[in-house]
Length: 482
Image 1 (cartoon, rainbow, N blue to C red):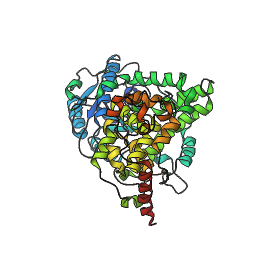
Image 2: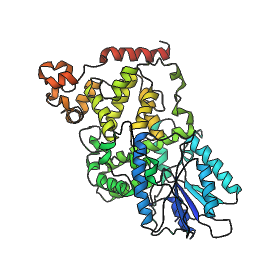
Image 3: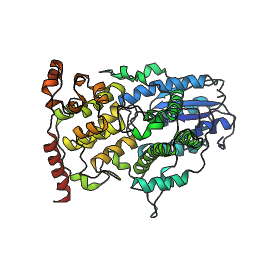
Image 4: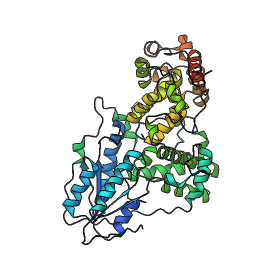
């Protein structure tokens, strides 16, 4: 249990400001509050002020369900989750005044806007003689702890992960508190339903019902993955096979922490329940998440700026019609369209397909990676700023440890390689379901095999692959002056 020192007099409660740590297990800020022996007030503030990037519509859907689950878990332990909407600094000062709080604790965020805001809040609270402490709940290693020989953050993943693993050490996971003592007088709380977090105009969330937001759902997902899917993790690039963990939205909202994932996976490997090669590859994906957090911490401008400044001169193409076709899964390339339709329906997209659709937008259409990143931010349930930005810049070639500029995914051959039997395409592009496997990734060559409905509804490619590839290569070569 984490210990926190309270320097103020009196017996006021401790405010636990929850953000992306919506769990009771292995929550160091919550542990710190409980360890004082004082009453505890768990608090979530929906802060949509300038400087903190507002959540996308899909993320707000998840937040609604996650807060409901967390509130129920807290009530089972005698506490109550307080909800407030507004600027965090103002809300915290209001609650300190209302409750006579002796201290405030929270778990850290690592984007610059949050760091600056939190530092100002911490200085203000300490200026009022309140105890104020923050902790790490969301990373195996905090970004400033893993540096290269020059004392800087790593820019290449492999040496980063090699060094990061040496810093992890033995991982201890603290249990959820058995009780959360509430103050005799509880502060007022907003009603979660009054926040209207569901997407509207349109409400596309019906398909999100496949998910179970909340700490229990996260624990069940990890347990099921380690018991089954991870055994075939070497097939993770095949979108028609369910072998990926699907933990990303749970990790983003902190319904489960990376220490829990690390400890459970290493334990399963040690027990012989998970093949070492499969388990270690999965943990390297957790490492990629850590790497992206490190990159954003050291280069906070990359949310809108190219990590590699030479890309500032890239000749992007503004094509609203093509971008709209991409968002709707109407490009004429089945693997691309399947991915975009999966995203719209479920709030999720298979990782291999994310790379294919991003490459198509950037390199086939020459549309700025920032447009694609913004669309993913709004429609992904697991929209995570470091990962979203880092992965889009990786595909564009403008980021750290980026894919080489000449890697232009052929959407036809990518489909044939990773969805050879058309399982994934048939699920998400059902108008092509009657095509034979050899034609399903190039349906424009299969006119005699297409049903009348498919001929009416499925379009020819909006760009020719060969021509688009040559155009993209020329655009990239222009940055090199050759």
